[in-house]
Image (cartoon, rainbow, N blue to C red; front, top):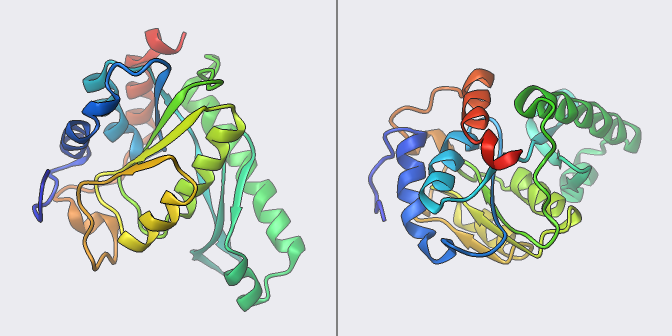
Length: 219
């Protein structure tokens, strides 16, 4: 438990998070799924500590047209789609624009899966305990899309684990996940990065290296 301290970087956050996940160590069918890009270095530490296979579950934010920084939902591997219907309705986003954004981001999901995993098939989640790991939760839309995708892929249990998260967003995630593990839950969270000393962007190469290190588990 880190209390109010900052994480040094994503690897440090992963090691701290792994201590909270000891109850899942040794669970039959446990699979750790990192949400690229930033969640993968965290997930790699968790997978190593729990001696579990590592894979990626690609999630992409659906930005409001003209205001891309505002999320109206998210899409994930396996065509998991979560929409914030309140935002869509409030801003009057046409359904055609929503559909176009979904198709565009699903294409990017497929591109990233190929880039990160190569020709290796994804881990079979049928009957698995899917441990979804990201570097933090702000709105939670991407994580909820990931939960939906993991269930659609046949996961028997879906656990969300993040080093830091907004309490209200975590509560919404808890409504769709079987468990939520988060050691740091500040009442005021304007951005995930403020809880890290080093929150530099994770590169595609870093993700590929983490996946390469776990390749024996994925093959």
